[in-house]
Amino acid sequence: MLEKSERAQLLELARRSIASGLGRASPERMPQSAWPSRLLEPRATFTTLTLAGTLRGCCGTIEARRALVDDVWHNAWTSAFADPRFWPVAAAELAALEISISVLTPLERIAASSEAELIAALQPGVDGVVISCDDARATFLPEVWQSLPEPGEFVAHLKRKAGLAGARLPSRTRAFRYRTESFRSRHEVERAA
Image (cartoon, rainbow, N blue to C red):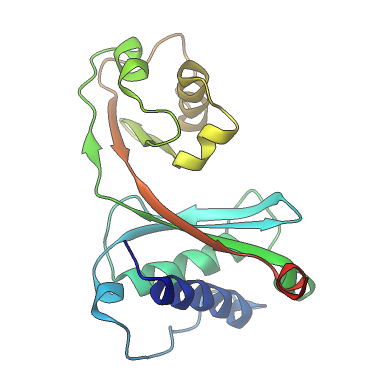
C-alpha cells in the first residue's frame, strides 16, 4: 500500500502531465524529482478521468514496464489526449477533472477451461480481469463491477470489448486477474466546498 503522501504525489504528477500536455502531440518529459524509492519501482497503472461524473478518458498498462511515476505521467497524458473514444481534454476542463489512479498487482492466471469456469472463478468487486485470444485483448478494472455487478454480464461485456462477442469464448482464450490500489482527487470546485 502506498502512503497518503505518495498517493498525493502521484495525483499531482498526473494533473501536471495533463496541464503540460495541453495542445501537445506527445507528453513532455517528466520533471525530475527526488521520488521515494517505492514510486520508482516498476508498476502498471491506469489513469481514469471523469468530468461531472462522466467518463472523460481512461488509459493504462496491464504489465509493469516502467517506474510507477513514469507510468502515471504517461497514462495521465494518454487518458487526456489520446483515448480514441474522446476528444482531447480542453484547458477549460482541467480544473474540473477528477483524476483516479489504479495501481495494479501483477497478473495472475485464472485456471478456467470454459466461460462458465471463468465466471465461477471471479470475485465480483475485487478482481480486475484480462482476457486474451490471439490478437484480441481487453481488460476491465475492478471498478467496472459497480456498473456490471453480475459475473456473467461482466464477462459478456468484456468479451464484446475484446471483439470476442460470440456464443462462447474460444478454447485458446486465456484469462488473468489482478487487484488494484485505487485513489482519486476531486476537482477544485469540490475542494473549495
